[in-house]
Length: 250
Image (tube, rainbow, N blue to C red; front, side, top):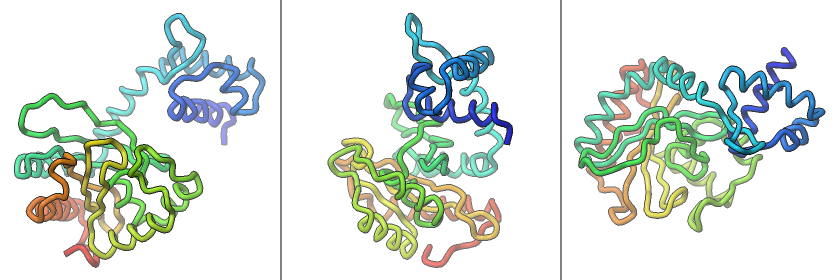
């Protein structure tokens, strides 16, 4: 491992988690001299991977990362295979749909199809959500023991009063997801918003992503017709990726 690259990657990860940090805070977290961290940060800043707050001494992730992430998202086969089916799913259900994949123990939204009603909606592609607080994440956790172990070890932080923070209760949901093929969350990440998700299976039977629908809490629980439409879209995407139907995913 190249030390300077490893340290730079750790700086970016720290800024991702904390949003804004100064040199002394970064140095303390990395257990490195401030002068060393300052040199690394200035190199990252020169490449626009890090930016300094206007009029401040703290640093944030830079605009170059947005361009890099866009290129990365465009190369994901699962994303390109999903876009048509997600559009049809949102048109059929009237709900926003999300495609999520695991990233550093969280789930990142790699594509979003907005509600077709034309209402103003926040762009979500590139947003990360704690895995244990989202239907997308719970599906990914249920089929990935390493991901689940990392999340449990990190601790289940509460985002709302309804976030599941009991490990045994969360593990029971994993069992239900594996048996029934659907994950749910009810206002666990954001008040007023619930979601339902299904696994996307690639060749070899590996769950590589999760497809979800965002359901307003006033319309929860999702109807059986909505759940059926979600299952069908997830199966169609999985077939395009060469994945077969998993046990329990009727």
